[in-house]
Amino acid sequence: MEPVERNLETLQLDGNPLICGCGVKELWMWLQDHLSYVPDPTALTCSLPKVLSGLSFLLLSSSAFCPQPLIVRLSVQDIQSHSLLVSWQATNTSTIYGFKVSFRETTSDGRVIGGLKTQSLPATPKTHLLKGLRPSTDYLVCVEGLAAAPAPATSSTTQGHTPPHQQGLHQNNGLYLNQPDMASKCLRVKTQEPPPPEIVLNNRLAIMIGASLGITIFLVAGAVICCCQMCKDKREAAKREAPPSQDYLSYRQFSVQGQEANAVEEHTEC
Image (tube, rainbow, N blue to C red; front, side):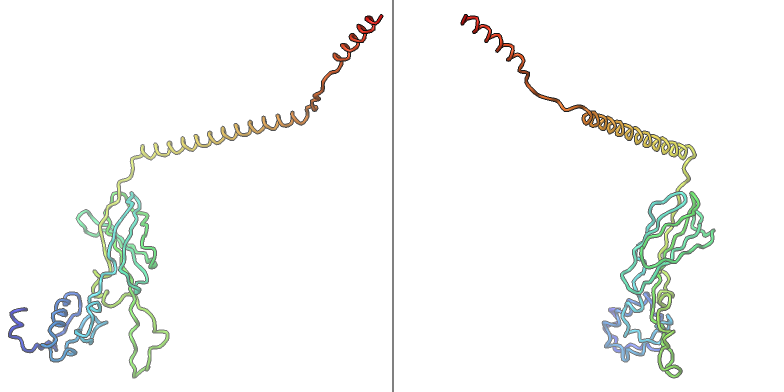
């Protein structure tokens, strides 16, 4: 456009049906920088989507006709033979009131062969476990953000105001309906093959052996503790039943020696 700018004096764009989407964002940016070339900025209006029909293109913000994607990131974790965990990150906007997770079977080259299965979820949490899948099967998993837009106002000539029962939020903004890629994100994933039967049996046997050893150790430990407690109780009972010990000195030896000494003294006197 730079060579045109040197000789451009005026630019007439009114009368052209304009689809206001992300495809005209660069045109909007250029016109915003060159409004002096546009005699009447309000003459250029949007034809589609319907939610923007009749509005002035140049008076809109870029986010009004080219919003950022609702689903920023989509990933699949913990892939098993019959289940997988889907997690996603949504844009930080208060208009999202929920999500819709859908999946269907596909061939290896991406052709859809299975029926569509969907489930609606609240705004949080942003994870969902898909169950009942077939082993070693390709799936197309999609997450769609459910955004809300203000209810359109009714005609002032018929009502004068929006009735209370029509005030609220409608499912999905018209911009996202016109641009489905902005509201959802999909990826292909393949479930794992089922484990061999011998591995399943080995796992079950290991669980049974581990449980048996745990029960045996618990019983042996309990028996040892009970025996120790019984021995301790017997010792304490024996101590309580034994007569108290009497610690005294015998004076018989001293009395016998005293009698002998007296006899010797009497003999000497005689």
